[in-house]
Length: 196
Length: 196
DNA sequence: ACCTGAACACCGTTCAAGT
DNA sequence: ACCTGAACACCGTTCAAGT
Image (cartoon, rainbow over all chains, first blue to last red; front, side):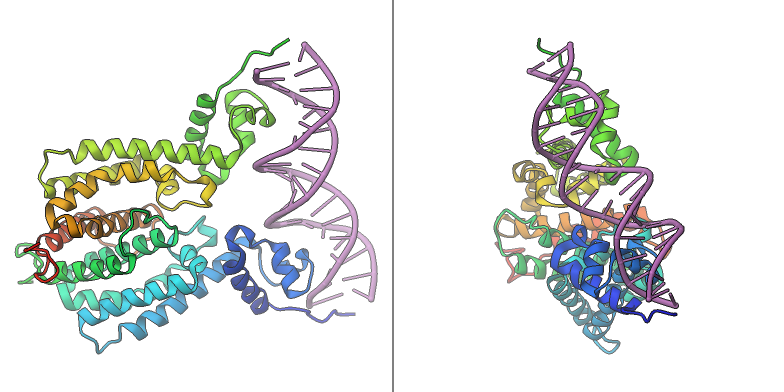
């Protein structure tokens, strides 16, 4: 006599994503997820391979959502400067809206809990397009890495409440974007910035 | 009949710091630390308040060590440009030498496991001094945050093996330092860069 | 004064037994 | 075909009992 499913892989993932923000990664236990979808912990293994895989799926879904936000905020038609400002703002909005998911994406744990490289690569495409417009093909990857590193570092520190010396954090974030745009626009000759 | 100590708070911390690099934060269990210092786990509580406090002490010690390295690499007498290059290199060396400690410092977990704000503030003083020399007092904090965010983001990503699109990671790190130095030197008028 | 085994409240995961 | 309780191997932490 087959027993009908009382839940599903998608419902388990959705419950996990909600719990992640509500109680943090450490509180995302199989028992808590199970309680939320209305079964006992062992039943989850019929829908998901295990906790690490569940975390990885949540991370992957978050990266894809973030990628869509970046694409919308830094669209093909925008100037490179506007694209970088938009991308920075989209990253900050995501970090504030879903801080735990942001941490999962940008300060990942063990490999088994990470978003897929494909999803991650795809998500940063709009940034790469913008830096290509500013510094040229040859330096576009280096510039994209500089931008992504700055944004992820800044927002990780902001979420961790690591800015404890006063000042205006939002203004300092904008200072950072403008500094990078300036640097990419004034790329030194000899490095290929103007002449490549 | 008093029993003589078979270990000490310092020995416990040293064993914990070694274990952290060898087996990672998740492997840093009270039982593993106890085995290394030659007692059973419950005895550790005579020397350390608990696991979180032990992790916090390791993090604090790492921040202080890093602060000394920054002071040596970006000394008072150096030009701001050389100080920022030196600070960046010191951060990268530390990240490579003690990756787990670096992660502990720059992507901390719960508050109870963190380095003290005093130690953290003190560690970044050389960076603040360098940015002050480049952008002036008023923007020195914003510039220091931009630099620190970039470095911590870049190195966290490098340690997490998040740069999977090829390219030369070391060269891209140097690209980042030079870009920031350029941006800080060419601060736009009206923002106080040249005229403040 | 420190060390110990036993115990408690948790984890993730496996598995035989139910329906 | 899915759900369940029981069990296993782990955690951190507490505590009475040893020396």
